Image (cartoon, rainbow, N blue to C red; front, side, top):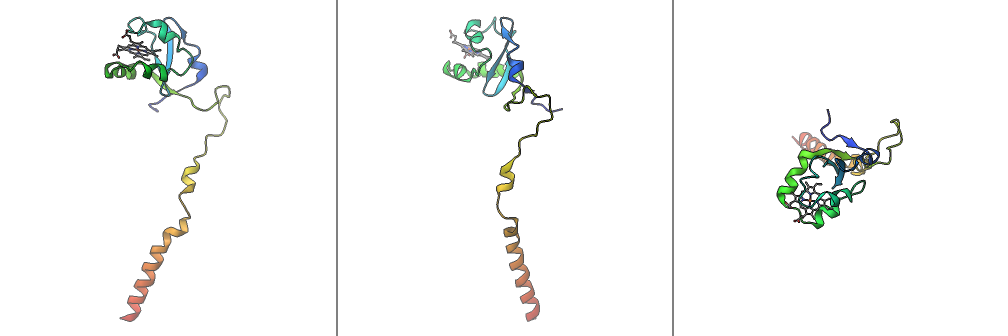
Amino acid sequence: MSESKKVTMDEVNKHKSQGDLWLIVHGKVYDVSKFMDEHPGGDEVLLSEAGRDGSDAFEDVGHSDDARALLPGMLKGELEGAEQSKSSGGSAPKVNQAVQESGNPILMFIPLILLGAWLAYRYTQD
Ligand code: HEM
């Protein structure tokens, strides 16, 4: 169901040849197999980025917006960031610690306590 399928580095490394080439640009994996013949920069430059991060090479050329617009059509998925390509599941997912670091939850109740105290004070004065 998830839109962004994860692609492992192992998978990328299976597609490194003429007519069967996947490239990594900005953390995403693109299947440029059919496009490589039409690539204005030629197929050799694409092949030289096989199996590695082609982001810098892609940016150095200063590709046009038209070139960038072609990318979504070739998208295979996101590159799997974690080094889990050899394990067949079962390893613990990353723990998102940031969620835990937003402060002491008791502090949230201080305004409520003050409000309660004020209301109680008001109520007892009437
Ligand atoms: C991965 C997807 C890529 C797409 C969709 C793509 C697409 C294009 C397009 C449409 C152009 C024509 C000029 C423009 O519109 O900017 C172009 C030119 C070029 N591309 Fe790519 N490119 C890709 C990857 C790369 C990579 C990884 C390299 C370098 C290693 C590269 C090197 C070049 C060069 C050198 C040109 C200039 C050709 C010239 O003007 O003589 N491209 N590319």
